[in-house]
Every structure is written in structure tokens, then in C-alpha cells.
Amino acid sequence: MTATDFDHLASRILDGGAASEADALAVLRAPDAETMAVVAAAGRLRRAHFGATVKVNYLVNLKSGLCPENCNYCSQAMGSQAPILKYSWLSKEETLKQAGAGLRGGATRVCMVSSGRGPSERDIDKVVEMTEALKDEYDGVEVCACLGLLKDGQAARLKAAGVDAYNHNINTAESHHDHIVQTHTYADRVDTIGKAKDAGLSPCSGLIAGLGETDEQLVEALFALKALDTDSIPVNFLMPFDGTPYQNTWELSPLRCVKILAMARFVCPDKEIRIAGGREMHLRSLQAMALQVANSIFLGDYLTSEGQDALADLHMLRDNGFTILGLDQSAFDELIAAHEAGVTHRAHATTPCGSSAETGCGDGCGGCATREPAIRRRGAGTEVAANA
Image 1 (cartoon, rainbow, N blue to C red):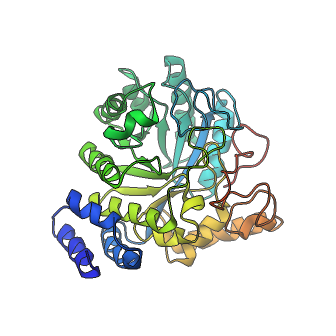
Image 2 (tube, rainbow, N blue to C red):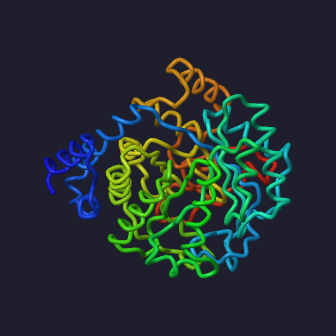
């Protein structure tokens, strides 16, 4: 496909058509020299549906590690030797503190995540209490829960408490699923997405790129997400933690990551495409370009790894002409000014790599593709202030 072909594809989709699997494969396999043409065409779809807005989400890891599932990519999985933070459930008060940091930092959705196969009824009780407290304290906040495989009736309980969305990623194509995890099935994951939808929760499901999948399997996964009609699609890029089966796995380049996101936009033009875990490590200097096709990010850190400094995220959005969903330009400028006033003593606050070592590089660096992920040592489960 040429630049004209990609533009024609965007026009066809805007006129009510749809991308085929062959179209998606062509986007993914576009020559690097055609990347800007791909971005320009996919960007037309992004602008048509979302303008220049970026939805900002914030993760709170309610329980870290201690998981009985053997997902090979995961630092929290059974058998993982990654030196991550491990702790049981946060208290309601600590959850409110952590969520509040993200909301004050510009997020409008709090994603409450717990490791494990799935929640017990007592776990649901905890999340219900946390959700009700969040909704009472922060007007208009969206709550997304990510607790693993759901049992009958649990999604309805979450919905009744005010949870807005439920995240459960399919992670990869059905044809590749058994290569990455063996303690549950692809069908188990699809079943949980169905339970969430049936209860009226907004379905959030995405994938992880860089797991040894083929181009065809990436296309397969995206068309599966389209068929599931998920409202938001987080696109993660494998973070190869030391101590996991995928350590030292480097299959992605920044340009390939951009093309994966563009493919997602062509296949699901009106859905929230979120750049999720691994964006700093794999997109690097192309993060802003990626937002020309995606329309959502996580602010600050991830579940077990550190992300780019929150102020650097906000500067990146404003520098590239984006606004945060829910904030006008004046409020956005005030938010950045408040961050600048609060973190001027931290030398790393304006570096692009997200270092926690107060320099652009060093033991805390999380932004270089030649290094392992930087383990999160701040925020939930610690006494150190959150990166928000």
C-alpha cells in the first residue's frame, strides 16, 4: 500500500466502511518510510472521533504479586523471580490516597487492579467499599476494576457499587494463547468480558505485543477485540522483566509499535485506543507520534514498573497540541504549573526517561530499550509519594 492507499482506506472507513484483515496486515507491514503516511491516515480517524483530546488513566495496584497463574510475561505470576513489590490488599484509606494522587495529577479514570486468578466474595466486598468511597470523595471519577476471572454475580455487584468499567485483556490471539499461559484458557478470558458486558460494565480489553506472535496473530487479536465490541483497548508492549520466561525478549522497535497502534485505529476507529505498559521503553522518542493515532494513556507508573515522570507526560501532551479530556486549556495550564511548582527540586522531573535516580540515567532508569524494566519502588505499597 502507498500513502494514497492508506488515505483512501481512512476515507472509506470515515464513509462507513471497515478495514479488512488484509488492510490491517498491510498497515502492520508498511515500509518504515511510509510510517508518516500511515500515521496521517489513521490520525484522520482519531481526530474525527476524539479530536485533540487524550484520556488520562491512573493505575492503583491493590495487591501486588502472590498470583497463582503462570502468565509467562507477567512479573507477578507464579514462578516469577522478578524482584517486584509484593503486598496484600491495600486498605480503603491507602487506596483513596493513591487514587487521589492520580486524579489530582489529571486522570479522570482510576483503574483498580488486583493480582490473582479472580476475586473472592470478600475481595469484591473490599472493591465495593473502595469504589463507594472514591465516588463519594471525587465527583465524576470513573472507576475501572481489573480483578481477574469473574464468577457469576460478581460483575453485577461491582456495577451496583458504581464501578464503571471492567478490564480483562485477551492479551494475544486465541491461536497463540496457550503458548503464553497454561493455567487458564482464552475462553475463560472471553467469558469474563461477557460477564462484565452483561452486567452493564463498560468492557475494557486489549493485548500485549512482543510475545512472539506473528503479524497474522496480531491482526487476529485485534479483530477478536472488535468482535467483542470492547469500548477501550489498552495496547501493551512487552516489558521483559528479569526473572520471567520472557526476560531479554526484544522484538519491538518504536516504528513497529506505532504501526501496531495505527492498525488498532483502522480496525477499531471509534474505540478508545490506550497506549499502556511499555510505551516509554519501546516507543521512546515516538510517544508523541503515537498519540496522533491513540487517544489514551496511563499517567505515571504501572503495576510493578516505573513509567515516565508524570510532569514529562503532561508536557508531552501540551507540547504536541493535545488537551486532557475533561480539562479546558486554562485548567490544563494550571495543572502543569502546579506540578512544576511541586517538583522543581527533583532533577529527573523533566527528563524523558522516568528515572528515579535524580538523573537522566542510572539505577532507576526505565526508559532505555537495552535495560530491564525499572521496578516500581514508589506509590502503592510504599511510603514514597506516587509518580502523579
